[in-house]
Length: 333
Ligand code: PEP
Ligand code: MN
Image (cartoon, rainbow, N blue to C red; front, side, top):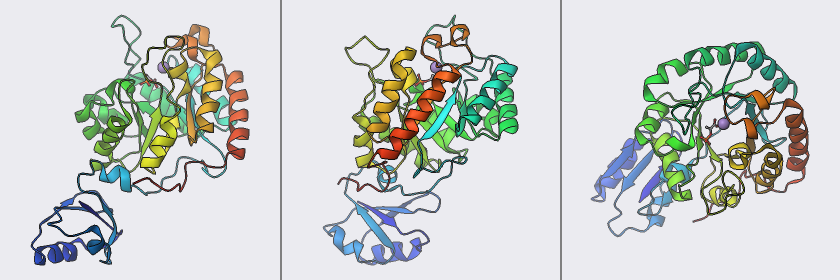
């Protein structure tokens, strides 16, 4: 059983009371929010709920106390979740500086909140473009300085983490969702993390990966559904729209949808984006390129800036009429 303490509560007093009852508490080192693991020795959760330090008691065996009890706040650029969806957009790969700057400025003018771009790329073929690495990171940081947009960049290896000091949101890609040692080391940078769901992962496994990140220091994890592997081959992956409300029933961590990698082809990106928002996602991650036909990676799925402009407008209109935005919904269980 886990005792979730109120923020600012004295953990020592709780441990002393547990000891007096013949129990030993194990405290998780999780920043402001303290969790105490205790084997209840026959005591019912209600007994602990009466303690003023205790906000919540999680059932014995709860595998993801931090994901289940996360109730933090976070700010992403100028985004107001009550008004509009979070828009993260940019090229699959950073390819050249001038094109990146033009794209970043255009996206900023369209109200995008975060610029994304790949520096080190995870490609299925070892012969495919692998990304420009450190140079691409430098250009992303120049685009950040130029536009004021925070940047979200995928981390592929622990060895690269020292290069990510100025990156605002660390992205863990689908292929690395269950690379647990990378999760631990990335989380130790104490930055927000955007975690993609591995296409083979269950929702439970996805949330456990988020638990790793929260436990090891990430202040917030954006859970990003980007399509799972099913028997259907028409699109690149199958966007698991149902995962959005299911995740939101389990956690208050923000849930996003990436329609680009799910679709694999640009005409399907907007329908999937709108479906994700209709299901309750708080925002979108969309690949945008000034000339997708010339893109070094994921050419078929990237939107032009004009196509993205239309999508952003319709995404905002839809968001405004939705009853629930995944905020402050009651959690299950
Ligand atoms: C990406 O966002 O650039 C990417 C590679 O996505 P995923 O990890 O979801 O395949
Ligand atoms: Mn891509």
